[in-house]
Image (cartoon, rainbow, N blue to C red; front, side):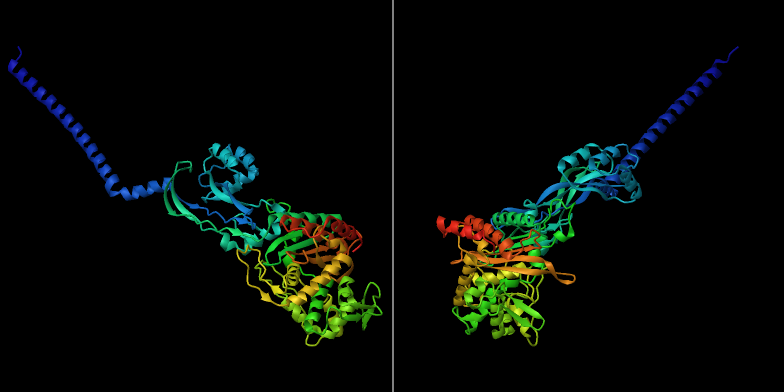
Length: 582
């Protein structure tokens, strides 16, 4: 028999136990839920309030970068704003070795695109795994950079830089010079005016994705300041003309090299300055060190007979001589101990003009002996010989202008016709510029002058006019006949000197020189041409250098719209005469 009352008690206890367990479970779940909510809430507060600054910085470290903004280097132009050196935007490929995988299969395609050795690329990425930056290929075209990024290789990035480009190439190479890969001037104007042309790099904050690509610019820290532009005195038209003719004559005579300088008579500006050999600053893979020099400024030579007109100017200025003075050159030579000065033949008694026309060493040396070395040297110095031109070009050679305590007769004699001293082509052009413009020495400049500079009078107008008339005769009927520039009159003087080698004068090697001006009645341009070691059998200044002067000056004056002076018949007669041996 079952006790109903006990059974009811058991049921009630079981229900209560079940109910208690359910309540405990519910409370536990609620407690855990509230705990989780509390923890999450606290974490949210911690992230957004307590650690907000730290976490923001950590996020910025991963996505925000400070990048440099390359400054645009100033443009170099000619006097008419034709570009001679410009900077164009390009891309540089670089890698972060700490992010890159040296075993990445796509590196094969990358090496092929960049034209670099694949094994070397993988080795570099592994070797510099602790670094965050190495260059892979600098300053490539944007299309190539785009193809590199399309490979989507971890740790491979690009950045914009600038590359220097020289539109005139080798024609202006010796004047303009070039920069290194970081656009720092290395030669020429690029070096001399590096600070002026260089800009100041800027900085900016940018947002990048996880592949290091810039999503957008955030803030500008400091804007880049571009370099300042520079307008040179060079006339690119005349530069091309001079380069073409000089290159042609060097090739025609199989010469070692050559130089040509052209000056504006009234301002001292350099309108053209070219050399052979040259180089292409846009492609320096085959660059020869000997071709880097701007020989017109850095190379010295004995000017030879081109100094005779200046010695003549010293004689006329002294008052001891006039245009009509005569000199007895018999018997056609002079001896100074073991040293002998000779003329081509015995010219006998000559007036001052004939000494220049015939280029008489004996005649001019007799004048020098009478004047004394100091008188001649003083005028040479006043014309700028033996001292810096002030042009500010790197590597300028000053030259040698002797000044012995006591002049020996042979030293006075040789000084009168340009031996025992040395000049560069620019100094020689400056000296002739003074004769051309009536006796005023202007400071020389490779930078365009917006107003006429102040000059210094170093010779009288009367003396320079008399010397110009002598130079006219030297071109019309003397050693410079082949220098006659077509429809324009000209004046100038030839020079032929032995080149100096390691053992002294080289008997069979010469420098052919011509220095002159045109038009002779009102000179606009002065040009000096020098050709080193012509090997064609012709080597006199009148044979090699004078014809270059003729062609360059004829075309240059026409380009400058200078009115022709000679009629057709006169020009034809002059051209016929210029074909004779000079």
